[in-house]
Length: 381
Image (cartoon, helix red, strand yellow):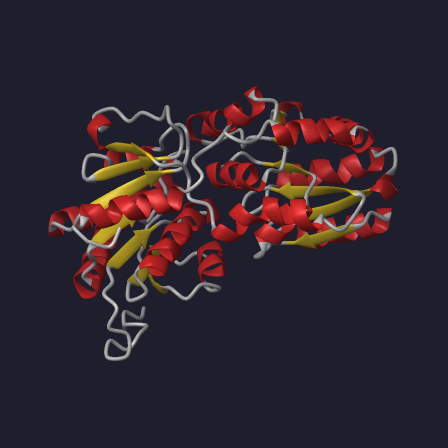
């Protein structure tokens, strides 16, 4: 862990703030934090940002392309785990809290922001113990267990959906929307101006930042049922376990496809996409809405409290997306839907037209940055 300033204070006298962001587990816990961090740095270039995660591969993959300082603590999830895994996770709590307190004392943040996930708990509780202002952001429409607990310690609870409720935290809740990175916010306008550069139906397959095996396999079955396979182009984020198998299967069937375990330039992929087949994690939903890409949502069936179905509801109700439960998903059903869109491009345009206003707020990162600066008494808002 490096906690040295990234800027020479003599050369960069611009005042700034110290913001610590804790989030772990998936890209969906980190990307909104990155959007807020970039906004803070844009307003106060002298600021320092530290991300605290658990050091898992997906977290380092996401953050290695950024310029932020990073640190890791021991932490793991509890809900949905076996008894032994729960005991192991609980045994990590004291070590995670001790590590968090050490990082907080070294970094001396002005404010701490928890994005959910394993690392948020020890860090937010540590900040509360030390009297450091702290906030949490709940990406999902139905709040997770971690944030329901942490709302007791937080000064603010930022939510992505206007109807999200957390018992006992009503006075702290601020509806901001889910922060989306600037390049993704801009890609819909770029597509409108420049076009996507390919007349084929471009299908973007996303199983979340770690991929989804069931969607991967169903899609490989689906391509054998496509009526006009030459009229399709596939962009498929598989996760690391299935990447080579999926790549080989597309090649064997002569399907035009770009396959990767993880894509870094999501804005460019959204710009190219006509339709997405994907999970309904909160960040995925927010990014699709911002990029104006219709979707066939296949919610993760084991998500806590079935929150992915709730995340997708606004776009589905508006006619901007379709819902396909995993229990009803197979290659034939996926192919039927893709064949329909390939032969009825006007239906996609209708879905795109229904997207604006369905999810979130246009400047969630700015709204959170403004409130953070007010919370710590900064004059720069």
